[in-house]
Amino acid sequence: MNTNPQTESKDTILLVDRSKNLKLLSYSLLNIDYIVWRVISGRMARKTVKIKPPDVVILDVKMP
Image 1 (cartoon, rainbow, N blue to C red):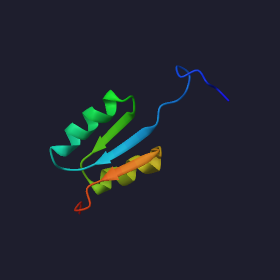
Image 2 (cartoon, rainbow, N blue to C red):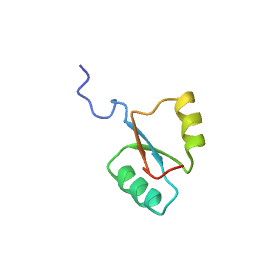
Image 3 (cartoon, one colour):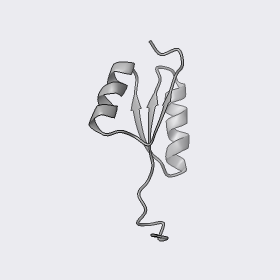
Image 4 (cartoon, one colour):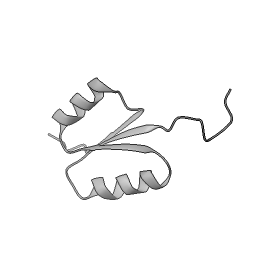
C-alpha cells in the first residue's frame, strides 16, 4: 500500500449542470484537491464518460 500522499492519484469528478452552481461547486471541489471535469449537457457527459470514466458523476436532476 502506498502511503505517500504526493504519489496517490486524485479522484476525478464529472459535474453536469447548466446553472451557476457548476462554477461554485467546481471551485469548492478543486480547493479540496479533486480533479474536476465540467460539462453543461447530458450529451457532453455521455461522451466524456465513454472516453474516460470519472470516479464520481454529479448532475442536475432536471437535466434534459
